[in-house]
Image (cartoon, rainbow, N blue to C red; front, side, top):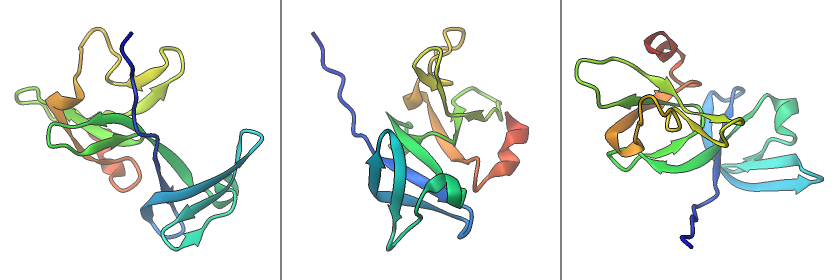
Length: 126
């Protein structure tokens, strides 16, 4: 049986600083995040602080860029300006747009062009 292992890591959007941080540490209890450690500071409960926690998908774009929830993905389609939001699909237990059987997008056949927090204008390209 083939083993599917991927690194579990997170980053977080902190609106108070307008910054995406790598998450250094997470304190959990009873399935809830109690505190996030970002850079040299902690946020406390991310819900209370308005912080969005973004999980690494385990995928990389064609240039090797790691793909996280909330990223904008642009597939290699000639003459296309399409940008697709990377998000978890609970019904298929996988990440959109890579789980769409109609298009068969491969993360290695496209690139990350930003994220929905730092590049909200890309929603018009979706």
